[in-house]
Length: 460
Image 1 (tube, rainbow, N blue to C red):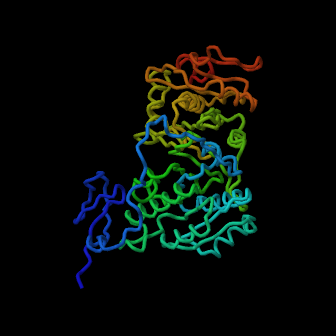
Image 2: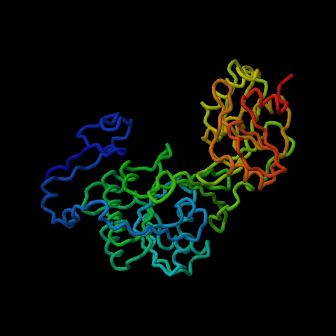
Image 3: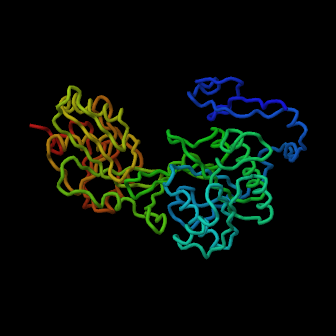
């Protein structure tokens, strides 16, 4: 009997080679070439063709195509519907990724229960757990009485047969890396198996109008494991983020063919499941220490949602040859740039100071509007002067120390006013033609030095 041939496949792009490379020739990624067994071409050709070649579609002019309507069916979980753009679209293929234990399976089982209560047929396919384990989780979440079909299976041929028999309206596949096609020689989780299993679920979703959610494992870098083509195939890619030291979990869309990719959903991890956090601003600033220097409130925008967060900075005398710069929740390179601008343009001495930055609540901020709050927090800690409790700060800072305009200023101000903030420091260019309540005071600034002087944060 001939010895099976081996080949090496890149787990990132699917490039195949008969020899191993440390660096993939296809995508230039390091250490992604994995050994697998190559299928014999004659054996593949001898197998009967299971699917018709092509779809048989005809060429049409674009205005002759019936547009129809794109309907979002709400899941009943407000934070998830916000991220999805209003709800689940029939016939869509979604991919949910996240670290182990972050709460993916818990949230999706709750979604199954909500959709089942709407009279729809729901199937949960698990390749990692037994049906008994799913039942135990359902008992803990209080959803064991809902009409949810459970299938513990890994073979895609058997899964396809069961799907055709049940004809569900909503399907969960947990997880796609555990599924395999029996007619393929490679092991489950390999590039070819993940690609073919996802392609089978995509065909089923598009043909039957069934919404399908695939659960994906993540690598140590935080990206979804398997071929990159997996994210190109699906309609929606969601990442479930969270720190085990915090109770909050964040659901973020990085791809959405049916809505915005800038929306953010927040959940609280409890023993009864994932609880949506509707008023995220009040939750994030509820534990803010009153009268403490180095703390400032900033209103960030996550898509169309304004959120108030507590930015904290600590500047202290350094005893190292090179002062330390530790950042949590913001870009470290951007913080180093802002510290240089503070020293050069605002006259604050930071060359001998250890600086620590923290965004309370476990959020990660990347928009330019966070520049001015970061600078103000560092200046407050350096001078040991606490800021007013009803002050909110926002604005972008340039290398010359100018404060630049930021978008959606009115929406940010409304969120600040709703939670009782009466003083708002903002760029002078953004303060033009703003309609604000009479009891709210705007502090427009044009330069970083002006902002530091206006708040009395210059160190003596």
